Amino acid sequence: MNILHETNMKSIIEFIFGLTIFILSIRLLSSYMENNLNNKIKNILTDFTYKKFNGLIIGIIITVIVQSSSLVIVLVIILAHSNVLDIKRALPIVLGSNIGTTFTGQITAFNVKNILPIIILSGLILYLYSMDNKYRLAGSFILCISLIFIGIELMGSSLYKVTSSNYILKNIGYVYDSKINSILFGSFFSSLIHSSSTSIVLLQLISEKEIIPLLSSIYILFGLNIGTSIDAIIAGISTNNYGRRIALFHLLFNILGVIIFFYLGDLLKSLVMILSPYNISRQIANAHTIFNITIVMLIFPFIDYISDILNPKKLGS
Image (cartoon, rainbow, N blue to C red; front, side, top):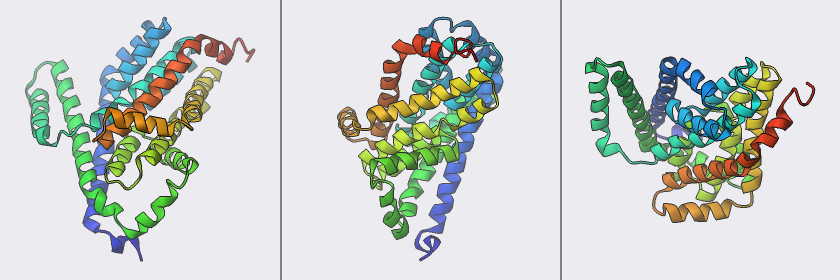
């Protein structure tokens, strides 16, 4: 039977509307921050990243602010292509960006439904009635965050009806039939929609409805990390050796993480259940954070050596 006949059309429309609001709010927030802070971000990336630890921290902070690891990494690739950043200073920023991108999942794991009107009102007051541009910027930031939560609420309220279709329940099993299938699905899905933030939130919502087991969600999460590298790869293709190798590093970082954690999924599941036993959204967010921080901690001590390997000049390119 046609899936549209099995599910509530109203719920499908509500879900699509919520997803649209969520994606647009993320893009709006990213664009607004980029337009207002673009030159400042470039100056920070070039002036405060001479020490690798500084680069790591700067990567985390800027990604949290602009809410887009892809944007930060693409900007790093462009700056490297323009010889503004060298590889040794660029790689710690990429590592930091991979930690900063977990911030969205942690925020969306909060249940703010009851205080959302207050948040929206405070954002409107700051934006409409403040004469100071800094407060107007803060108001815009709050409004964008509010729209993100509105999108999540709309998606969450409609998702159960949409996914309770016999067609979906029958075929969703293929996704978590094996670890490889879960990883491949996550990689494909994230590369398709070009947004790790959206992918993580959708995974949190689906997991809340107990449509996919937590362990399978964790392996889908691994795949999402790989798929989100697509923007950096696309940007790297059109740049010089510096840009391409930074994009390659970002991809290999995520692949290495999946390889390391491939047999540790059960351990990670147990850990996140201990940290947040009654909140599956938080479990997904914590798994994402633990995954990325662990890989960064393993790679960071060797970042100088990796930089030397990837340096085109030292390779005679």
